[in-house]
Image 1 (cartoon, rainbow, N blue to C red):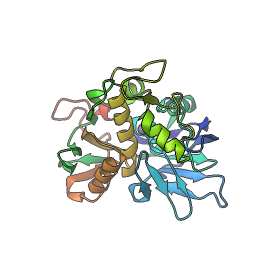
Image 2 (image 1 turned 30 degrees about the horizontal axis):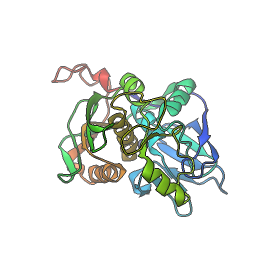
Image 3 (image 1 turned 90 degrees about the vertical axis):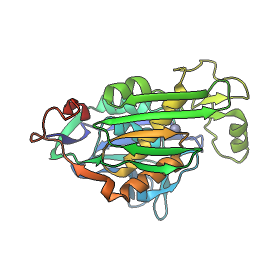
Image 4 (image 1 turned 30 degrees about the vertical axis):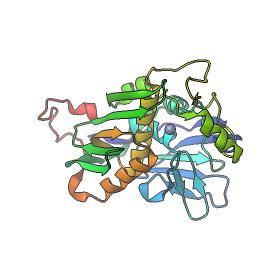
Length: 302
Ligand SMILES: [Zn+2]
């Protein structure tokens, strides 16, 4: 039986907040079985918590923000992305303010912190959301759908009329190894004209070539260059994996994404949760066949 997971001990990630430009800190903490993933605002009276669930998403412009009655947590997707790939079911993410460190704009630092803490299995079976029927959102210009698949796979395409980006497509089976190697290091990106406009409004004070890939009209501003020639589509996959954590359970399915952003991904998650005929809850355990009808080993799910 595949058991739920948390981390073995606390692990910290420090850096600056994208919007405030101020130092901030996040601490991953072990949580009991059947808890789920929660953000905890340590800086507020009573240490209020927010579940990483679709119902708590309050904004999806540029980043995904979770909100409670009097407080919020912004840019959650990069740290959640690492949790999706490593199938961490139960975790408290403690914060000292509303922001999560942007780090280098990728999930690399979050992944390193989780790996340094180590994973531990818990005394409860993990439940997966198994997609039975395709679910679609969007239109011709941009869309996202998920279809049945015995594992977690993402096919993503993007299109930008910028010489450094252009058309990029990547199809990848997500597991701990492929995520660590191919996805976790892909950085977020922005265009210099947008960066300057947002900075003049007092936003993204922490935005720079240290925290993102920055593009001017024709070229890349970052002197160190790209980490992958298709780093942009890889980051879109990183973001999408963060957004599907809002389902509340790990998903088995194939995501097909075309020019998606956080708005569309959260719409898809909402539609999956509201389409009970299209998925079912399953456990993978000792009573399951070792190899499914398509000849895939079930351990690949883990
Ligand atoms: Zn992102």
